[in-house]
Length: 225
Image (cartoon, rainbow, N blue to C red; front, side, top):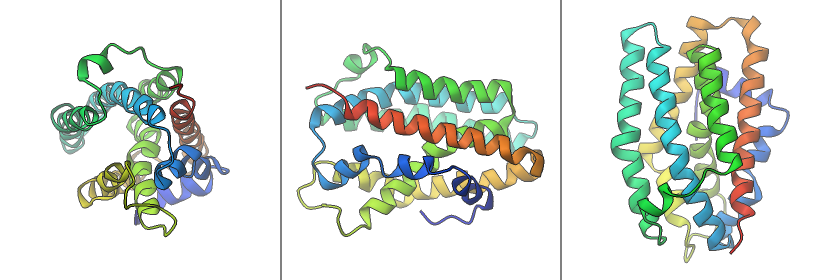
């Protein structure tokens, strides 16, 4: 994904390799080659459904943490998009993999799902909206970066790859635009709520979130058939 966000680029540079470990995790590379065992992908899809529920909660928290109507409206749009569109699209996609909503809803949350989602919510509760959006950035912006990088890599197998639709979904213009907006919002938030004194703390949040996202991939990779 092409982004002009200064803060996002700085957070990546300060992540001490955690970002690269996340975006080039073996789970991602096996998706790109089409070699990921299907039980691993199904495990990921179920936990991603559970993750999205907390994702909506996080944007609800962002409304509370906003101090300007424009900010509140942006967060409200994202809550609605998650609840009314994204979760529905995810459910439809999962049906193609033999997963019903009822079956996914009945699954317990994996430790990796709990770790990342509660980390995001904790950063939002304990901090401000900037802390919350930085914690979310590896997810929102990261998926766009991963999909764009993999789909444009010559080593990625598209023909006959059962996971091609997943990459195309996140590499598509609609999601890329959403991610670019999220990256740009970081600069706006930093200008209003930041200052250089906050950067080390924000970098720590970002790196931790990237590690937790890598753990989420690993959770899928370790699924048993």
